[in-house]
Amino acid sequence: MTERIRNIAVGLIVRDGHVLAEEYPATETHGAFLRAIGGGIEFGERAAEALRREFQEELAVEVQDGGLLAVTENLFTLDGRRGHEVVHVFALRSDELERMPLDERRGNLDSRSTAGWWPLDELGEGKLPLYPEGILELARGLA
Image 1: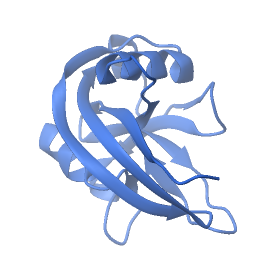
Image 2: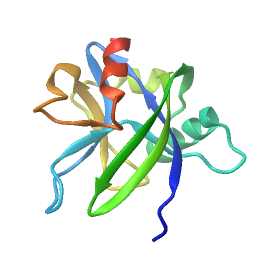
Image 3: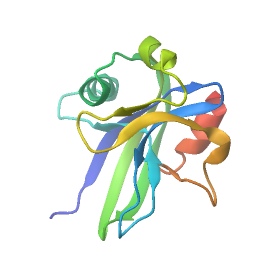
C-alpha cells in the first residue's frame, strides 16, 4: 500500500463533561482506544461538508457546524502501518445526539466501532486514549 497524507475532518460534541467518540476494542496488536467521529475529505468537498456527510453515513444523524477549532497533524502506527493525517477539527452540535443518554452506545453504520459518551476525566495519559493526537485538549476546552 502506498503511503500518503490523508485529509480528514472530525467533530467534537461535548456535554456535561463527556465527549462523543467512537470506541475501538483492543486487538492482538493494539489496546482499546477512542477516536473523534469523522473521516476522509473527498476531492472537491469542503471539510465541513465531509464532516456532515460522515456523521450521516456513520450514525444517520444531522449535525450543525459550531466552527473550526484547529487543524492538526496526526502521525501514528496502527497494525504495523504508518499513518499521516491532516485533521480539521470542528466543534459540533446535534440535537439528536445531545439527547442520547450518557450510557447509551450506538453502532457505527460504516464500521464495527460504537459511538457513545465518555467522561473527559477518564481519558488521556495512562487512561483510555482519545485520537487523533491533541483532540482531548480541544474537547476539554469545550467543556
